[in-house]
Length: 390
Image (cartoon, rainbow, N blue to C red):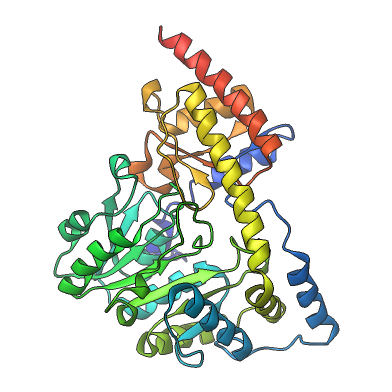
């Protein structure tokens, strides 16, 4: 029988995060700090709106691009947070999570063999989605000494005559790094000079703890060459509702919507009605969750300082990215021993790219109580490792 499988699919490695999730699922007494998911329930006002839409029988397809009402609220949100205007009918698409939007943007923009620049460490989906779009992924290794920000020089050095798109993943998963306005202005100069495009994944935009998040679309000349991706999973604790969106120039959006039309039809109707309520009245809920995350972030940074574990201070998302190079172990070895000996699960940095070696991703989307217990266990584990090195 002929091989029924596509080679490019077989060659893609499964997510490196899943290995530890699967192990932890079999360990009832383990503490997991590996999941990138809010520990909050979706706020009641948002859940109520979803329930109400079901009670009113709003269970039919929406338009392919999403409810006009929701797309209008998305444009209002971007206008008030970034000062940028979009046409809700031609430049906004509601998707099944932000992940679908990433896939659509790449497939709509890339011709076979064109290069996509992917700063790493970063979200696990970018490189596989680029490969599925027949692009050539080109990795830009972000550096700890730069707080894992993308610099203009790193970008310039990576661009060739085949470069088409830069993926801009900030605030960043897994590092928690952010790009401030001055950082964005520097790379925008290179983008304009080299005439490339941007896919800006801003799913963590509301979880920024140093200053208000700045989107690259707010800079001169960037809106017309950027696909802005965001969603409701992180800010509004709506992961299971599977709802995201993209904003882009009409020329790009028309093609993204075409792919979405044939592959998905439309995003979940119930989720869309709930999202309207989130955008209209959810600011206080977001602010409360953000303050709680910030409290946990500060606690972890203090705990690392107390145990002498090196970690740059992250100002976005809900992750820290401590360095474990002093122990002479790979990230996988460290994570496996920590799980076995202390029953604490973290994610090896290499799950997010080879340059994540020597680091761990620790999520603080967990209660302070669990974080305190986990930090005590990690401190005990590190103490033993240092004794072994003597």
